[in-house]
Length: 129
Image 1 (cartoon, rainbow, N blue to C red):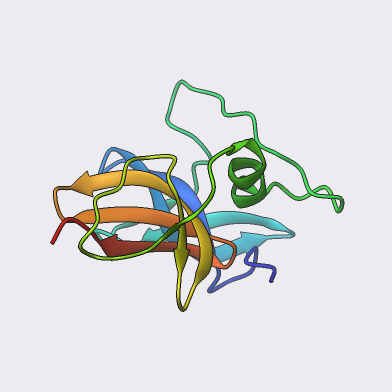
Image 2: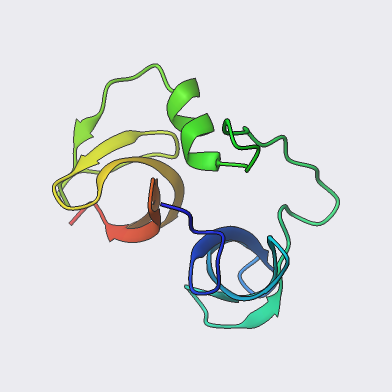
């Protein structure tokens, strides 16, 4: 699924949250996202592919588009764990969700929430409950 379209999901630096988080694409110029809204705090801002002052190497697909999901899955050597809201997770853990499929934990938001990047986009899930 190609999420690089208006309404799709993409990771962007959120200046309000001070984190790389899932954002909804609001505007595109040719094939590049330029305006996004944070799925966590709902702020709208210009798309930023990485934290200011840092460059991020991104994996490329055969079509030349970046895909963080495939890069994280390729780099992971652990087998997937079945997702359960009762379990706790750390960044880098691979989970198998019954609805979303395989994903990689990209951030631990707090004691009860994690962000998991699935092939079709990032989701915030509960954990440790």
